Image (cartoon, rainbow, N blue to C red; front, side, top):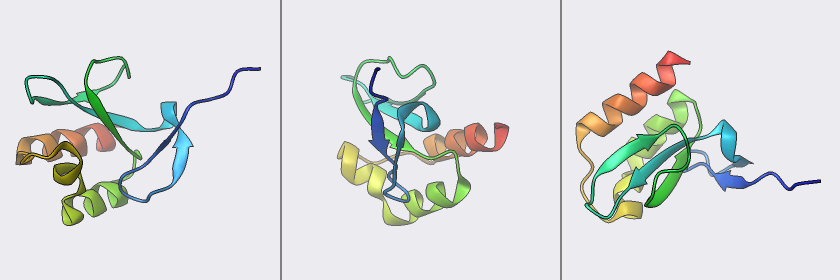
Length: 86
């Protein structure tokens, strides 16, 4: 029996199965993108597929602290689009 990988949501701090979360990646060129496959190279951070978690993430600037850089509003807007699509 394989163990299912668990990750922590940056919004609610709950551990969930990796496949249930949305992955945000910072690559070596300091570009931030949304990783739907979970296989892109770079530093990853995870968030629930929930607008409440996204709002907590934006309000606390947690993504900026994790990636140690300013996050553009476009990234947050694309995250909103991904969450509302589902």
